Image 1: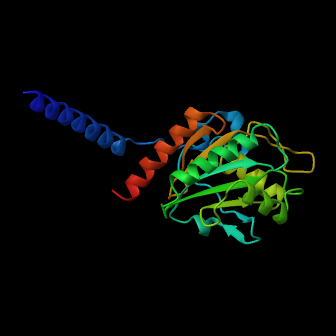
Image 2: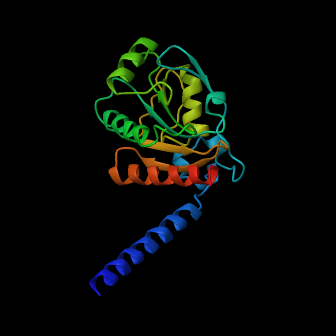
Length: 217
């Protein structure tokens, strides 16, 4: 009788886990357009757009001095953050959490990470390389990048909705944001998360799995 009861309990647990996994696989993540996001996070020129938003093409340079473009992320799910190596407040926490995401999806060939420096005038390739080595960045999985400041700031404000400040990407312009942005294989934004919050990081990992499961049912 006890054996039957134990088997019955295991069966219930198995069914509940199966149902939970099945529901997670079916969950639909929202698609974010500029009009769907807090206006403070979006450049004024694109706030009216309410459909078909896709992140713009980019051209950056990674920790190895290699040019990185949208082509490198084609058909990939990826997470983006904006940081700078001299930051001593939120950036170290964010980078640690990006490393956790990296480790979670190390074996996936359809997931990547992208970190973009907001102080490209200071964050040279050499500095990024030392930073990447210190933070356990895996080159094939995670690009830590620099580039033209105006281009980077336009990406932050018009493509990824990453910052609340307005500016022109000029010498005095500066952005500082804890946001992680989840992008799907169609270049659509599917989530915006606080990269310093453990619960939010757990949620982005869950949401990445949902997107990857839809790519590989």
